[in-house]
Length: 394
Image: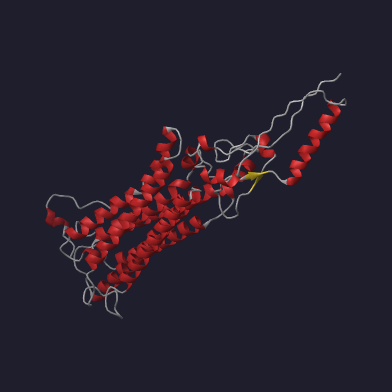
């Protein structure tokens, strides 16, 4: 039974959201739905920022939307458990309530894994897009494969943790070592999130950006370590419990906090402060040129407005990021040569007695593009070959 407030003497009863010292149901509800609001606002800000700059939706966006859906569903499942006594340290009042709590824990644990997986997938897709380096892309694919393995093992492990048909009945059924399995899942999760914090930071660190911009950019990725810290705290709490740790209010609370950090930190690289701090062309050049009147400043493949009028973007539909490749069409080159020929005929009606020529040519465009890491020192510029002659009349 809940503790009698008068049994505590002159001490006032605990304030909201705590009902009593042994009842944290209101805390779970308040924190859970507050986290949902935070997630919704951050994800909308991310999608809005990207749409405003590119009018495109990519794989990374779909992954974060799915992660958000799983997070909202997870919180709703926790609320169902709370309505049946999840969050109270005293035993359930009836067997029906205990069954409802176990089903809630069973469901929101699987939803938690799926939400974390798609948040990771969003970051991996982002990293694959921002770097043209083939080695970095291969590493990203390797991380994605590990994340898929983690997700499959975790989901199937939790889905069949106890004997069928009552796979959710971990109080009376015959089950695997749930604490040991969850420890494996969380350690794997910690390693993945650590890599997802350090690997993009390593890519940014190698770029020749000024210290302030580099620090801001790396800082966005390193916030992923908040997920790592929360996961470690959850393991500490699990091993500090003498009763079933999965029916405790701290387990449910930390699951919602980890889910929130996982989604919010995955959205950080898409928010405007991050995009403004990076000077490496992670926004589609065509989209920026359209919105800035033809001027591309500070991005991969930078050109001034005059050159951009002579260039043609090749931004791929469905992605805001591009390698910034620009090329002049044959018709444009012919037009330029024709104009120069006309100017030469008008200015020089008499045969030339002396002339001077200068010619500049561009090497293999693909090699230059792959070799660039989108920094100021690696800016790729389009160079057009012109023939300039000076002639003297008799």
